[in-house]
Length: 379
Image (cartoon, rainbow, N blue to C red; front, side, top):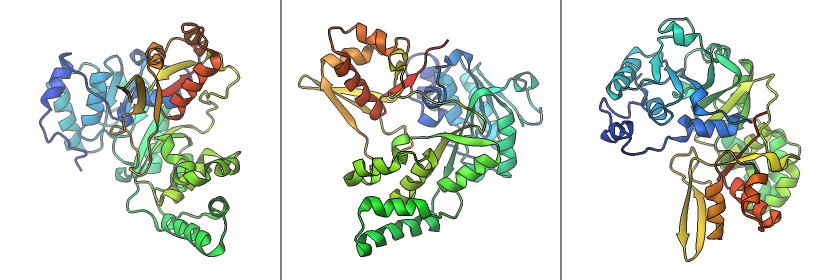
């Protein structure tokens, strides 16, 4: 099946202009190497060093736009559908991309063997998992193609919402209406007892990737998997209950409270991987390096600056609100100085006598609203 076939055989003229350096284009989050790197690599990896594989690229539009933007990275594209792969190859030839190669089947050494001997830093699967045959076997094969420290990004469609999710949501509503329990008690009981049978729920995805020797490192976009988003009136109490709960438990609860999530996007690593992404709670906070989100935008009004994330390129349900940070105009200079090289300590020194507390309050607001990402210094 041809997928996604967005260009219908004709490359948009704007992309020829991008190739010629005459304009820029924004990559959707799933195919943005910066986005993947911010959630998957504790130490930032320069694009010039990345080997990227799209193991089910379809007709290739999204991977090709990614390669146009990340010209220093090397891409290897594959797809089980010969017609889709031929269309992708034609696009690449017409654009004259030198950083994209093709493989008929990267797991059997057909295609370009010289490229296939290189393991990938990032493995993408453009096709939703719903379209992949013999998925457990394929996941194991893709895992074997990953370098130590690499990541696999996957997505799946969930509609129609499973009966298990609907039933769990109905049980929560029943408890609230008939038993007089608080919202927090109701949803917490549901979390402990929830059974969400059916494909493509969070529990199903978790079991699927674990059967292939993988675990979920992150859900993208994170705000969508925060239970507090769906119960804002009980945020603080819910936060207390969530302490000590796992990423999967929180994501499962969010899925139930949302009544289902249209598309899951997950970042996976091998089960024995011990990496942990840095946070603002780390003891070595001052030595962490802040990076601006690739989807951050700002606007100015009457001496103030408003920072927010561009929503259109992110896999976010419509019901999820996106925060906005309002700050004095002076803070725009601080944000502009974030270059992915300076640590918090070094950045703060540039703006003395601004106090550390005020500086970090601003940084915390940015991070909580998806405008800032953290990485460790390379040792």
